Length: 190
Image (cartoon, rainbow, N blue to C red; front, side, top):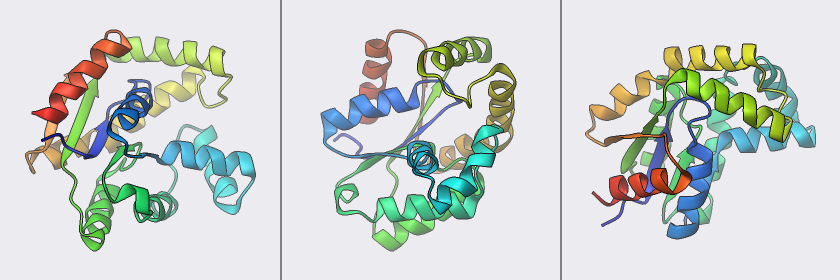
């Protein structure tokens, strides 16, 4: 049986969003990316977008209250009832605990946490390339290094949080998109 309520974890630039997009097409479940939802809110100039923009531009995490609200609303939508791939949420232990409460209220449980790992120098190079291709203002070298630090300090502890529950599968995030996708397929089918 393939897991269908998934969380993708890994440092910025590891490929969580790319791999989540591929997987949701195969499984017919939504990708829930708070980063994408927040960037859309910024582009739309909404109240949440204006609140989030200053944090995003500095490479800092958007406050929990804002992110949890966005994620809870999305998880409650009908298309997420059959499964989902979380990408970019939770990012802190407090958010993980909030996610646990949200899923409990919805009568669901996280089945698997897929952790993609790539060495930091390769990620910095990958993100700088992406910045040039996509013109993302949040991807300059200083901001990237700050995002890596924030990940190590605030998000990496989630691996231990989910490891205690026995739902972590770690895999190498280097290689072609197809190679990484195959590693993910094997991890969620195990």
